[in-house]
Length: 289
Image (cartoon, rainbow, N blue to C red; front, side, top):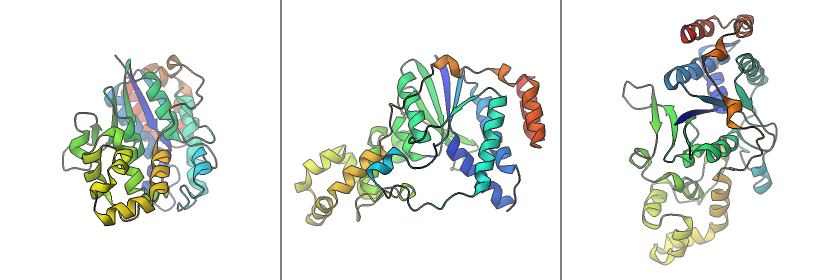
């Protein structure tokens, strides 16, 4: 079984940028440095056969058409972050690594589409801290995240074996959970007065949002009233949380093929030298030698 590595490059870019600005308010190309440190670390550890990096498109998404306030609480990212994005994309091009953004769609939707298309016959690894992508965890699909426990392992793979142990519900219930608990990062209100703990308890008892509404008479009078008052928001948030697995992506799997030969060309080293990313050059030389 071949391995496909799908990178949530948009989130990795943001995390790299803000980590860099904590180190130095004027970080120059440190964000790009941190981006490739993480990317190459995963690449070296997993040795994938195919690699794809997904970025968000420009402007509003299709979810804004459903809910105008979607992500409305977010502060606009500084121009310097977008300059780093262009530097990163230029380096990825030099590496002949495939990346894509589509206006109207989010990076998560691109990853969901490729996962849905290829998961039956391939092992899929998704690098992201985004909880939305957890809904994709399946028999052949794992999500790689930074390990926040006291373990010596830098990363953890979230899969079907450990998912319930970590979250107390299952991957297919992620969208129902967000329908109730909401998501402040996306400005999804969920059901006011129903937090994470109650959401998990109800999912364990009734499986999904539909099951809960079919059993409102089994809830307390107060809970019943809250659910009835917020029914429209609950199902709207569930719908918005569900990833789109049908983005129009017009390339096949072989287009994403990767091996160490991707790194064996002078253009990569000249590009990295131009951006003064000498540490990244060292790491790549170790990978190919």
